[in-house]
Image (cartoon, rainbow, N blue to C red; front, side, top):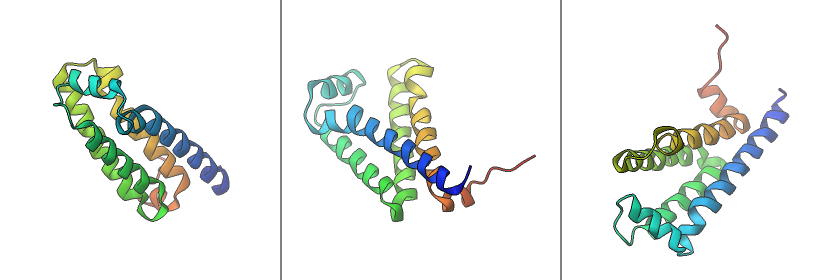
Amino acid sequence: MTPKTMTIAGWVLTGLFSLFILGASVFPKLSGMPVAEETMAQLGWPAGYVMTIGLIELGCLILYLYPRTNILGAVLFMAVFGGAMATQIRAGSPLFSHVLFGIYLGLFMWGGLWLRDATVRAIFPFRKA
């Protein structure tokens, strides 16, 4: 792939990841949708944490999208995903559909960043065996 094609593909993946995070997680939490509070209660979270978690996710997304802080945003997002995975394990959720979902999102997020940022490709190069 040419560098330009990689950058475009990376921004497409980043856009899809961002839209998913905004639509499926941040917006329901910050808009006070009942489904967000109900889901958190099912996972054992006390009432009142929905807004805080939504703001943390939004902050991570902003850091991830801004080129000067994209690596910091990705690392912080992985911390959020790790917490989500730990919550799913504690709740006894299914492994492949719920517990590992944070890994799937993380791979998608880092893949977009790897494709669009040459610095990340330099840190995590693919090598031929």
